[in-house]
Length: 208
Length: 208
Image 1: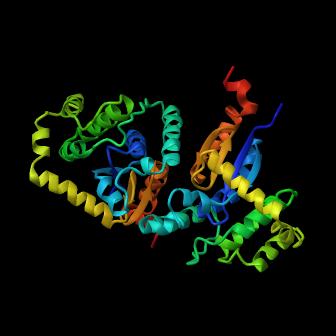
Image 2 (image 1 turned 45 degrees about the horizontal axis):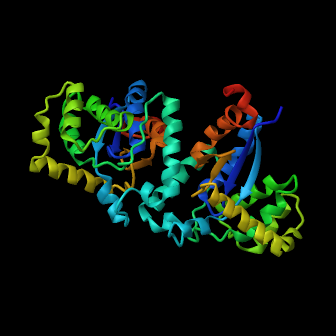
């Protein structure tokens, strides 16, 4: 029998993606759901909506609320949170390296290290030195950085972002189970439940 | 000892406010939390953000997702949902009448009747006949409609909306416990929990 599968779409610049990146592995393992980590870039998707930066900057009331909400959520989850006035960070390098890291068994550890460096410790993830540290922490060679900026890898990230847009994504984190879309860390549990009961592996249970 | 208190801010035009309006009374009663229902208008708040209509229309991907998300949520809650192409509806009359209805013990029943008529049955709540029906269903006299359009009542709604904005609200539903703000139906449980443990009534428990 096929195991239930979920795709996790995230941007390293996204605060709520941090929450999902830290919560997901444990929840998915417990539920027996396989997860495909799909780093993408919100920038082009926001640009298509007419936004040149994060909506949390464009709409200050929403931004102020987001940070307070993140404080409450991280506190409840026991995660560190460092507010940074450089929000949103440039996440292109991190995403490019993540694509290669995720082809290894250390990929999830790398992604979590990046989110922790950024939102847990306030480091600037556009800096190569920070990414090198994250690679080291997750047992990966810093040679991945050279591969990350090669044309085919850059193009792959562009394609993932185009696929995200084509599949109706408009924010991060998002989760997909086949064509079913879930937006926001608040929908993580529902997405896992959907993967089990309505995904390909679950079709025999709920449907005909 | 003071009972924990929560303010529930909603606009009758808001789909997710429908979910909270139907869920809140049961949850609050079980938790022993008093709820103040505060109808307000999103229109002026959206206008201040540069939006002339619902963000679900301005951003089609978000709008398409919202309806699918509402389908899933209402199905899980056992609530009816009728999609309407007149979204967002004009909610001014409903909000004005609700202000008076909420001064009686039938106010919550009236608000739920309006949300059900709109999102459960697809009726146009800007129509006086629909509001009259909702009043009848909740045991209230249709004379409230005359009072609703009197100047002081219209002004009261404007003041509530100004207060919402001043308190940092940028969407609906929202919940406040003193100065603490929670946005979205997804935060309802957290807001109730906050009212119990951090609200005025809970200060003796968590704080000094």
